[in-house]
Image (cartoon, rainbow, N blue to C red; front, side, top):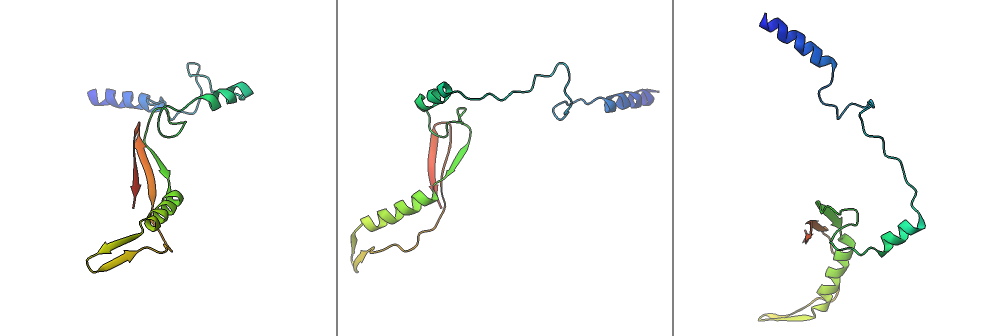
Length: 121
């Protein structure tokens, strides 16, 4: 009879969800739904006056993983740096970068918390 008792308990548990995260029905003990709040001019001024004390986005106060695409800036900067090198003397001659016609690659700034690195590949 032990097997029969277990089956009836399983059937009871099937009718009531044991994990309520996915349940979309509101119950009396559930938290109220958030209501949108219109920002006032004071709120906007306070946001503009707040200075950022951490690297990364303003929304990422917790310091979770973040990536930002810097392709345009990095490609222009690399071209600028290559041209500014001037000429290099070698035992077999001299090399000079006169013009950079194409620069391709991906540049990202990646970080978590206050630790950020720039990756170019």
